[in-house]
Image (cartoon, rainbow, N blue to C red):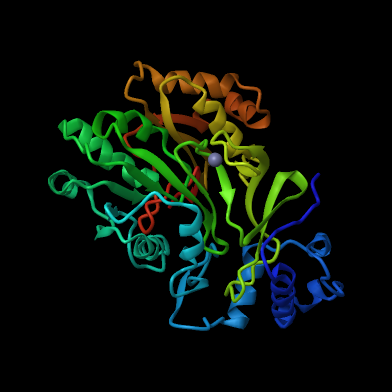
Length: 407
Ligand SMILES: [Zn+2]
């Protein structure tokens, strides 16, 4: 286990001590920070308890931070129940630092911002703030539905769009439709993405539609804001942290983030997003350590009394040839118990009988308890081939695990 905390950021210790003082001023959190006498160096962070989303929401509810200059923007900061919880960011959305490190866009670019706008989601505005710094020409597209794809794709081709950004599962059907139409976007050079893992389906369609296009990713969360960047030369799960992010990998490989932004608004102090990670040397050749994100560690759910690891099951499914994407849907029925449905989006070259092969792989796999539940009750498992996975209407994001109750 790595315990070291280090950073070359100026004022790092003062910033962290300031965040600790803020958290301590929150009555509901005072106890958990009471034992930390002083933070004399970043190494002392090893004594600071990690915080999760609920802790941060409690803190923000009390602190209601305000930016030093300009507007303070609020965004939805998780919270699985009730009314939206708010995270905060100053005008500019901290994107100057991102621009220092990550330059997919320049003044000659014509950039389509295809992240959905509004409804407290930050991505559209974040990329708008980024575009401001690059001097590019922007097109605010937002969310469009399938009936609108053809007209917009023609517009992109006519205008010579050079860049498009969006959630990968939103971009996939748009680029897939272009391929179906035989439409080319020869000027498209960069595909900007954030919000979920890269979608390998795009690697199938982009070469046919836009052979020059390469992916450029941002990694982070509403709480930490942008934590890392990558380029086409990096693996799609590997990130170069920003200088203002103190990234630490603790027990169980769980990543925690500490903000080193002077005047940062969210009091992010050893904040765990639930992602696990490891330090690697990136294939792109940039020196120093890069963060490889290994997926979530909280993917365990109860299924018919047994613990089912959604990530492990989906990894198994991803290993079946012809599977492009998959998703686990657990539905609880009052009378007959839970059912497990595996949705599979086929790759373009998938052979017939994919659902049966996926089912055989799950039943034959050694990932433990749940497969025995399926053997006892084969009807508890259903594999369904589909065009699209279930997604969040607001953000277009696809969660690997969907849980619902039958009504
Ligand atoms: Zn790299």
